[in-house]
Length: 361
Image (cartoon, rainbow, N blue to C red; front, top):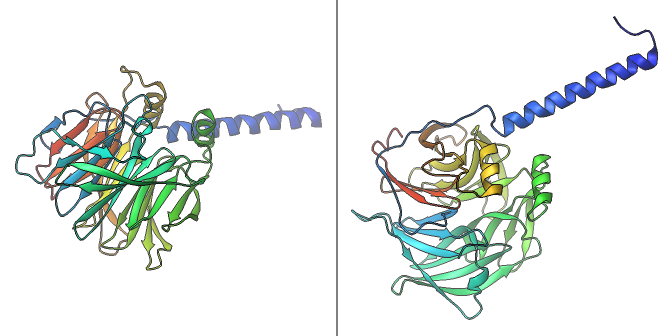
């Protein structure tokens, strides 16, 4: 029976509205953090672990013409930062990568904790650009001596909470900024509020400028230089945005690819234009794993392959790999080369899987 007192009626209506809002927000949080999901294990072929990767592989980059995969390790401050190279195109590449020694009088090895990598190649010269906390380290690869020569560090006041880098020329690159705050509880609160404070910066060789703002938690990025496309993934929105990369390096929005899973790493296959993504399919488990960092905590892993069609506005998605976290936790990077799938965990292990049927995987 409805109350006759106007004040009591208003009070009840306010309570019901508040209850509806609380239920709405609760359901939204449950869906975003994947409390309704679980992972089912399957692999594309025989899989084995890469040796000496106890501190994870949060990012990888493939040099297409040689098959060399550059792997960064040691993202967390309590571990030692390293860069490895792995020969993916050899007939029997084995499971042991080669660590690259880093030389340079201004290089601070103690505070080197790489989290993302991109490269630029010209006339056989290979330059690596590696995100190290709030700076980008520029390293020249010496293949004959298996070492990296530190050329310089690029640090800008806007380089805060960087998640990924995409090089488009010598000392020219895009970097994605995940949030306004750098780290800690303020960043956690910001992400929980689903604010779109993420942004994209372009460094032109001299200074960084804001290119795109209003991005929600940009977590990964890659460039398809053959087709002049830039892909930016969002962990909280569970999608990948596609942009055309114009000659003046300005961006034109093309489309958005819904994944229904949280992407953390991207790789584009140059020959086909296929997009590979490593993901956190159950986000609340990744959140717990990332904050707790206990051995008993696991986070499911997933790899999706997005076959971009000729019109570049449609696609077909398949799932080559999925694991509940018992084998590989928190998949954060992926590379596909010579019918082998490399999947890097954020803090531990790197998996190499043979892809038996690459045409349908």
